[in-house]
Every structure is written in structure tokens, then in C-alpha cells.
Amino acid sequence: MSARVGVVVFPGTNCELDVQWAVEALGGEAELLWHGDRTVRAVDAVVVPGGFAHGDYLRTGAIARFSPVMDAVAEHAAAGGPVVGICNGFQVLTEAGLLPGALQKNAGLTFVCDTVELEVVSTRSVLTNRAERGARLRIPINHFEGNYVCDAETLARLRADDRIVVRYVDNPNGSLDDIAGISNEAGNVVGLMPHPERASDALLGSADGVVLLESLLTSCSAVTRVP
Amino acid sequence: MRYAVRIDVTHLPGVLDPQGATVERALPALGYANVSEVSIAKTIRLVLDADSEAAARAQVDEMCRRILANPVIERYTVEVDEVVPTA
Image 1 (spheres, each protein chain N blue to C red):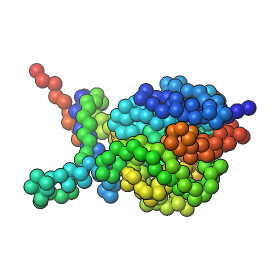
Image 2 (cartoon, rainbow over the protein chains, first blue to last red; image 1 turned 45 degrees about the vertical axis):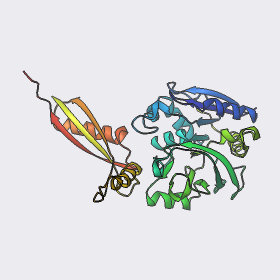
Image 3 (cartoon, each protein chain N blue to C red; image 1 turned 90 degrees about the vertical axis):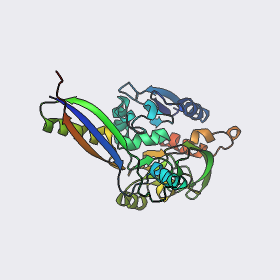
Image 4 (tube, chains in turn orange, brown; image 1 turned 180 degrees about the horizontal axis):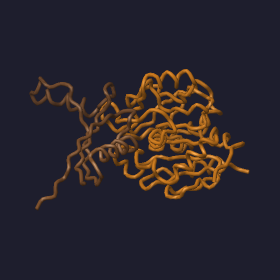
């Protein structure tokens, strides 16, 4: 049975079809989950994709965390189910308290739209279990608020517990410790600013995101499904 | 009672304020070389019906903690004024 991935759609989300396409291209099933529904429909994994959920009003992700679907996403995460937040989805997961820290405006106030090099730092997360530690991946970024920040204690914990999932090789946005993506303690909740789905086919300029999405699909076996 | 509330949301000390930093760099270009510590904050104004000022403040504090401010990067101050109906 192929992995079922639910892709959360808020008003203002705009990367859901890219994620759906990429998941299906790798042999998974993908279905869209509307933010107003209080369910993740027993999918194996949840992706919170990029965009501008609720217009990014107040702060990025601040309103989205109160959407009815987020309780089900939190329950899925608590049961050990894979949850990946990409770009705006990362911002939503930090606001929701599923990941520590926050994403603030890029240093220099520049919107960055580029393909950057990432280094895989941890392979114990649901997004990197098929990758090699130290591997370099070329993945697009596309954000104004990707400057990761957290307090010194949190950073020390992220480092000590192997929760920094990917780092920028050449920091494009001022992120603390070059952080591009982190995970929760168990490694089943991951947030990252780069877009693996936009690097899922050589025709897109890079297929380096495939190993990340394949990791996610691999993680889908043996999960507890939450209605 | 009706209260007019003003909430100022500012960056926590030590958190990068790229907007403030950019404006700080721009001001000397206009000849204002004596300006420092520029920060750009957010002001939220709202009107609240509550039984007392203490109740109004408690609710505003709760709203700030839950949604209006992000304690990881922001802090906030609150001003509450009773709205006296005119005529």
C-alpha cells in the first residue's frame, strides 16, 4: 500500500499542488486537507506547504495555527506521525508550538528567491532518514521571513539532540547557526524553509529534493493514524 | 465598561530588527548622523467591553500571550483607558 500524504491548505496556501505532484511522482498518494476541517483523515503523513496562510497577517503563521485542522495535526504529531512544514508551513509549525523558535524577516530585508546549497546535518528525522549525513543538496528557497531565531538554551538543545536537520552552506537570510531546518525531539516533526518539492525532477533544475521526499514516504510505514 | 486598548509589540532585546537596522542605515544618508537604536514596532488598537480595568487588562494579556505577540521574538506593553461615552 502506498503512503498517504495529507497536504494542508489554508486560504493563501500556494504550494499544495506542487507537493501533491511531487509525492505522486514518487509513488505516494496525496490528498488536500482543508484547514477548516477538524481532521487529517487518517493519512500517514501531513505536509504543511508553502504560501501565505491567512495572508500572513499579524505574523507569518500566527492565524493559521488556530485553524481547526491544526488540532488534528498536533494530535497526529503527538502520536508519532510524520509532519513536515515547508517554508510558510515551517512558520506555522513554530507558531503552533510544534517546533521551537521563530522565523523573522531576512537580515537585510531582502526577499530571497534562489537555489541554495544545503548540508544534511541529521539523518534521524522523517525528512532525512534516506539521506547521508554531510550530503550537499541544491534546493530552492523563496521567502522573506526565513531568518531562524531562538534563544541560546534552545539552540544548545537543538545541537546536542541532533535536531538541526539541514544547514545552509552559504547563509542567505541571517538564520542563526545557518539553520535551514529543524526537527522536534523525536524527529517526526520537521520544519524547513527550502522547498524539496521544487527540486523533485531534473527538469526543475534539481532533483536533490527527491531523497527528502522519499525519506518522508519511507517514514509513513508503521505510523499510528489519527482521524 | 468600555476600554480603549493600545498594545505595542516590540522586538525582544537581542533579536535582530532588520527594518530598524535598515532605517538606521538610511538616516545618516539624509544627514541625520546622530541617530541610533532605531527599532520598528507594531501597534495594535482595540476596544474591549469588560467589567473592570483589571478584567480588561487580564484579557488583553491573555490575548497577547496566545496570539497578538510571539514571546520567542517579541515583548509587549499595554495601555488601557476607559472610554467615557460623550453626551
